Image 1: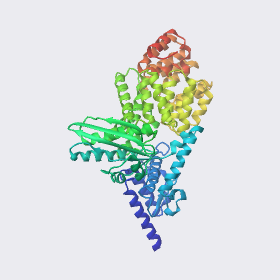
Image 2 (image 1 turned 60 degrees about the horizontal axis):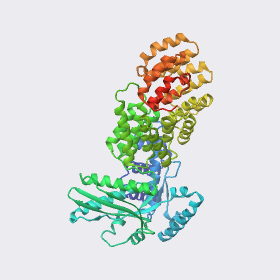
Image 3 (image 1 turned 30 degrees about the vertical axis):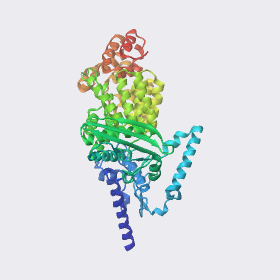
Image 4 (image 1 turned 90 degrees about the vertical axis):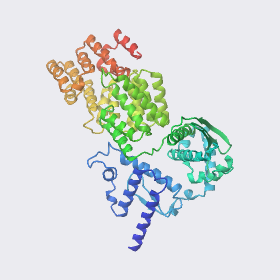
Length: 599
């Protein structure tokens, strides 16, 4: 019993060491998660370490929250595993215990460091030899066409040397040191970079050195060095990244920010340097350090996008609140831009549409400025360009987004809905929508988008089958709209009417009523629906009604009114099967030309 108690206390001591380390010092959410799972395990309550319980106890979720729609616990567990790995490869390498969180669960394990595999116990010099050997393999792999797979998983050791203060006033040392610390902190949040600690870097401050010596002492393959000169309100920072092995600068830049205050200058310069290095080194995803409240609002907004219409006012409000709490949270800006993109075509006659387009583009550009390798940011910018009919720029942004992250469901979905679909490139739109579902098989939005574009392609059987694969979500109306339309396309009219009777998008039900000869029910619906659903009184509903009657003139008149919401909405609407009968009309050709839509 005494031995067990002693061992338990030793593990608690190890927990405190981990939580007080620099790897966890600013990571409030993962620290709370680690403390909870370790204490529960030590107290013999590992059976309670389930996702739903952790969401409630650690992250304040409601007892009835849906873990399928809210990925907070899974996301934080992933971040926790990354931080533990980083800690035990740096500060905790000599610790008496190793705490791990195995994949696929939330029950931590504990082991002695001597149980680490031989490769992980190798001495630094041996690891350097191994790294050199791997570098040779990388060169050989390039010729075989597999370099990218290796490069993505390789870790780049990098060190930041203290910036040299060139000012005559030594009092400005604080600015050079503060900026150096901020750069180290920012670089440490980039996956794929092994950044040498501030303590190690500052040990070289003021000492004559060359790049080879510094790289050898810090065991770094790349060195970031530079200088800072302040003269009154003018600041000039020179920075360059040097490859240690051959002393070749692979990047350099001069920054001359407008002087406001120390913190704003440090943030601007450190972010600029770090983002430039990420672009040059090819390193992608960034780990964001943000306060708990901002991150919680961001996750809530993301969850609401899949639960509600992505352009819902609630979604926009949550993203705006997250940004208000942390103005450097790039994913929140990207999410806000995407939400505005969806909202921009949801309402015709919106007098504030131009203002929304400006906000959309400003949010997307802010996201890219904060994190130029965030795929969702480039995708959001693509939606902004598409909503302005700037198709070449939109395509460039979507392609850049898929290059950065080929597995982003959001990017594939946007590429389909906002680019290929309105341009009438339906098979390519289907391909992108399929990719979105593969990347996020539990997303109601991804499934309903695939269902919808399959309808446009005339693949009614597969569209109906796709609905059956959709995660159950009673609030996601558009999935039921897709199923009803698919059933009608299959000739199963009674089932179509039953499904469409449960949705607010009454135009499709009216279309089916008219097409099936049930005119009395159609007339009643046309009279009552706009009153029951005042937010569904736009031209699209009546365009569907007139399309059901085969009335070309009134259908085109309503479609011309729909053009007010922009080329994206008009483009994918014109490609809908309900409006196939007017596609060859010269008036639509004129309308397409006016909106920048190709034939």
